[in-house]
Image 1: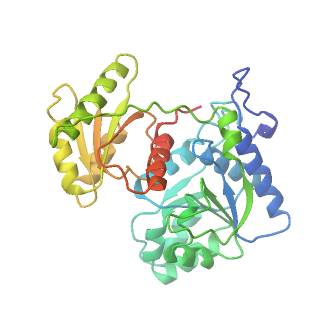
Image 2: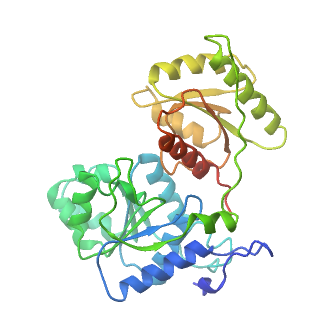
Length: 345
C-alpha cells in the first residue's frame, strides 16, 4: 500500500484521496491500539467514507482475520462487495493495481459444526455477517469465530447497546474492536458505553463540502383526500425533469404497509415509470430489493426507509407522504436518504 495517509482529498485542486475524517479516524484507531484493546467508537458523519476507512485499517494493520458486523442483509452484501474490490483505494491511486484483494467470506448460511467453521474461517481474510446471524449461531461454532478473529469492525454502531449487539460485542472482549457510526446516540437516547476515540464535527463536514443542499418543495392541497395525488404529481414532475440529464430515482415514504399499497396504486398510474413497493413481509421482498439496487425501478414506495447503509447514489428525490411526528425521526430519515444518495467520490 502506498502511503495513502499523506494524500488527502483537496476540493480546490480536485485531487482524489482520503478525506480528513477518514485520515483522522485511521490515525485515532492506530493510536488507540498502541495502548489499549478496549472497544472504541469512531464517529464519522454520513457520507464521509466509513467503508474506505475500514479498508485502510485492514491494510495498514494487516489484520490477520477481520470480522465485520452489520445490521442488515443488504448492507452485508454491499460491505462485502466493497471489501472484495477494496472499494475506491485502487481507483484513487492509494493502492497499487497489482495488490492482491482480500478473500472475503459472507456468513449467511448455517455452519454445521466447529470443524466446518474453522475450515471456512481459515480460508478467509475478512468475514462479513449480521448481528442477527451471530445471535443464532451454534455455541461451538461461535467460539471458533471468536477465537480466530483478530479484529472486529462494527458498522452502524448506534445499535450496539441493544441487548443482542451488546452480548456479541462482550464475547469478543480483548480483540481489537472499532465501532463506526454517524451518531453515538440511539433513538431511545442511550449512548454507547465504548470510549469515543474520534468524532469529526458536522460543521467541518459541511464546510469541507461533504453535505449538499436539500431542495424543499412544499405541496399545498386543500381538497381532502387529494393530498397524496398532489404530492405524487409534484414528485414525478421533479423526477421527470431530473431524468432528462441524470438517472435519478424517486423514493416515496409512508408509515404503514396499508399506506404503501395505497400510494403504490397512485404512482402506478404514471405508466412511463416503473414502480416498486417494498416492506417487511412482502412476498419476493429480496428479489425486489435486488432489482431496486440494480436500478430497474424509477420509483420506490417503502415503509420508512430502505435500510441503513443501503447504497444507491441515484436516490435523489424523496416524497414524504406520511411525515413523522417526531422531527428528530424525520431528520434521521432525511439523513438516511442523504447516505443513500451520496455520489461516489
